Image 1 (tube, one colour):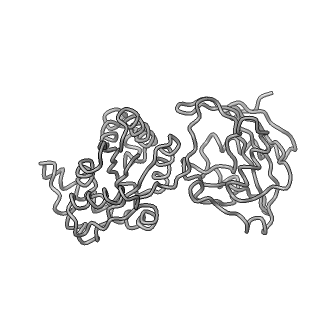
Image 2: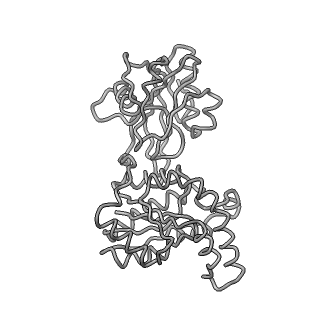
Image 3: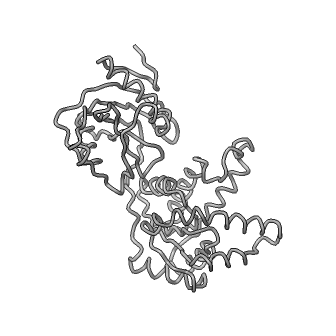
Length: 344
């Protein structure tokens, strides 16, 4: 299990986490700041200059999941992780990666009143270098606005502790008691098992009366996606696509969808690749669209988009697949692709 301590920069996450590991039996502290610091030494300066924050590096988010999973495999027990996550898609990606490994995450938000938070930030002096401390205080202050913007979804997602009048030790006792009594519940991110080899997946394109197609925004991985998922052993691929559409957005398709393309996706660690099928699920009427429902633990949003709009939402490999699927639909044919390129 992981107890993830979130909150604004300067909210006292690290000091509370240090106290917390003394209160939760068989617990270990993991600070993802250490992973970010390692990347600053490992990555070329050119790559680091491309982002404002190491959290924007996909490798950081992947390594946080890998490191947390490795620590739990090595040590067992509870991992206490103090880390600010203000972008919901990053929270979803990291927590979804942990959930895929069957690691339970309990999300806690430390939320002091803002005037008190500002006072605590102004009083920070922990590096012994006035210039460094000044830069840290400035960093914390500039991130108060993003914290306010994120607070609504954070408070809805996490167990919130008002630490305005609490010391770090008192905050830790409050968190420990809430974890022990079950008031901090497991974060409801879908648990999609990580593949151990190549997979077969079926996606379904659903169109509206303007010939736009439906995309969904998964909570458990970055980027938008077509409705669909992994084909289960012994399951017909087209039926798998129909099942996933029903599970994901609540629509029962009347007819088996027509195959548009088969694309072989090359292995790209940590992914194993495999065959990706796209089907034409037909056109949805207004009454169908009105029935769309999202499982909150799996999908965050849905929208109908044009091909041009999809270029901004889909990862490149899925966008290439989409473009060829639309050409196949226009021509009334089926295409065979290898890594996004038609063959045969």
